[in-house]
Image (cartoon, rainbow, N blue to C red; front, side, top):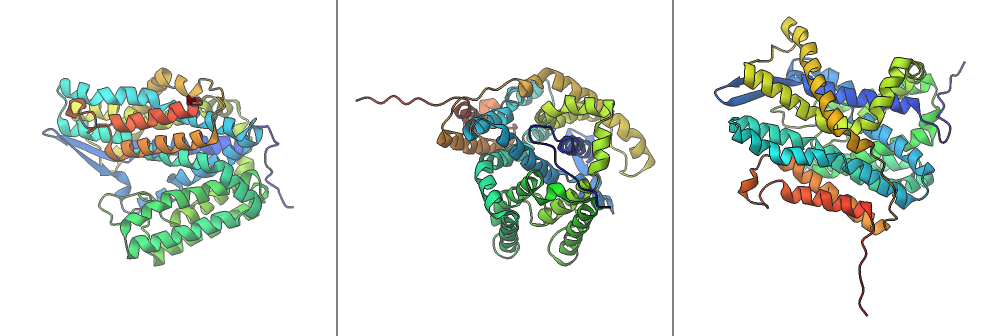
Length: 427
């Protein structure tokens, strides 16, 4: 008997997407907390990566969840856009919802490095902490542009369907060829092609064939996606790990490669095959409570989970001389729950203090479409600058030398997204 995995009715929440997004953000947090291999000696913090342990690269084929974040984001963006009063109001609300949570992060990290220096913290760990605080903003920068492109990409989806992600994937392969054979920097174009393609798959779940796949069809999709990924790794220029590894000549993530598209297909099939089970799980009171609590705070959880790790590492490693045991050893497995638990307690405190910024109502402001496009571009540029430069430069080094100009771009984008700019014309 053929079992159909049907979509949620229009206007209803899709619990499958809620579970996928919650699982994805928890996977991001858990991976980032468990990856570092830390030690401290004579004022210098040494950082390794637990996933360089032989064979552990295989874990990244599921733990690298950014494809599912963009997939679920595409589906959720389409569903919310269908419910919106207008495209402009939807985009204004979405941009503000994404940008407002970064305000407290900026307020803390513009001051934190100088404060740590004044308290006597060694310079090298402070530099690392400031860099880490900014690095993960790359995701928000790319996602902002993806959200801004949603109305156009939705029109393309409704006209050409799955041919759109296929064309984008083809462009990503061409970019990879140029990256590996001609000019490496061209690979950054795939930050657009790859993630737009994955986002487009989310449209096909919310309004297309992926939303009605049988369990067997979903399983076949998973096998196909992971199979193509395996072939690309075995016979192509792509590394086996789906995250960047220290010292590796090529990273599948920075910039993204086309292999992430086949990985996204495999992961989407895997999760869709589990959809009936996940729907049943989501109905349990404890799980439903977690989804209700975490759902409105996904961005805050993402933004603050690395500062939580910085706090725990600062106290444990710099303060008490803790060093990470050999990954995979009995000591590592024994201490991992304590490490994650300590970081979780700190994150809970940070969310209590700053999570309210994400849940604050954000009414639409009737902003013109051109102004919204400018807002997205400016804010994305500022976030990319912070991801590249971090918050490491002392404030007294000069206004233009540190993070302040990048923060100003983000704030300008937020202001443009919030209300229309009135230009007085004299006649």
